[in-house]
Image (tube, each protein chain N blue to C red):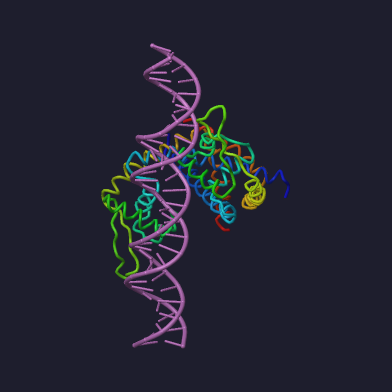
Length: 146
Length: 146
DNA sequence: TTTAAACCTTTTGATACTTAGATTATAAAC
DNA sequence: GTTTATAATCTAAGTATCAAAAGGTTTAAA
C-alpha cells in the first residue's frame, strides 16, 4: 500500500468530485428554471418512470431521510404534481402517485434535461464514455457494498 | 445526435452520481467521527495545505457563498481550530489562519481520510484509476468552462 | 477632493435538509 | 387474545446552505 497508490486514489476522488459538482450545477439549472428543485425532480421522475411508490421506498431510492420525504412530498402535493394514496391493505403505508400535471411537467423537462447532459458530455467520445461508465459502475457497486 | 448517444450520456451521469454519493457518504463518516462536518474539514484542510487565506478566496476554492463562509469560519473559530486575522494593508480583508489545535486535528484526520479513500477504491487497478482520472479531468474541465 | 464604483465581510431571511422521537398500524409470540 | 416487537409516517427542533442587502473600505474618475 504505497504512498503513490494513496495519492492516485485521492486524485481520482478529487477529479470525480469536481466533475460531479460541475455537471450537477449545470443540470440543476434546467430543473430549477421549471420551478422544481433537484430533489423534487428526482421524486417526480421516479414516480413517472417507475409508477406509484410507498413513501419509504422513495427515500431508499433517492437517499433521503424519512422526515425529508414528508417535506418534499408535501411540497409536490401542494403544487399539484402528485397525490398521496393510502394503501388499503396496510394502513401504515402511503403511496405517492404522479398526477397528470406532474406527468406533463416531467414530459416537458426530461428531454431537455437529458439533452443538456449529452451536450455537457460531448467532449468525450462514445468509447470513452463507455469506458467511464464501466469503471464508475464497478467503483460505485464496490463502495455501495460497504 | 442520436437517442443512443443521449442515453449513453444519461447513463454516465447516473453512474457518476452514484459513485460520487456512495464514496462521499463513506468518506464523510471518517470526518464526522472527528467532530467536523465536510465543509469544516475542507476549510481547515485548505488552510493547512495552502496557508492563510482571505475569507473570500476560501469561498472560491471550496465553492461556498460568502454568507456561508462567515458561518463556517465562526464555527471553526468557536471550536478553536482557526482564528481571524485582519489584513493591515486592506482593512476590508480578513484572513483565516489555522491554529495549533487545528493543525493537530488535520494531522490526525488526513492520513486516515486518504487511506479510507484508497481502500474504497481498491476494486480498481492503478491503470484503471489513471484512465478514470484522465477521463473525468477532461469531462470536469470541459463542463467547468460553460 | 469629492463622489461614485467596486470590493469584502457580515447580517438577515428563506429553503432544504437531518435527527430524534411521537403516533399509529401491523405482525409475531406466547 | 394480549402483549410485544416491528414498521411507516409525521412532527419538531436544529443545521447548513444560499440570495439579497447592509456596512465599512478602497480605488478611480471627475
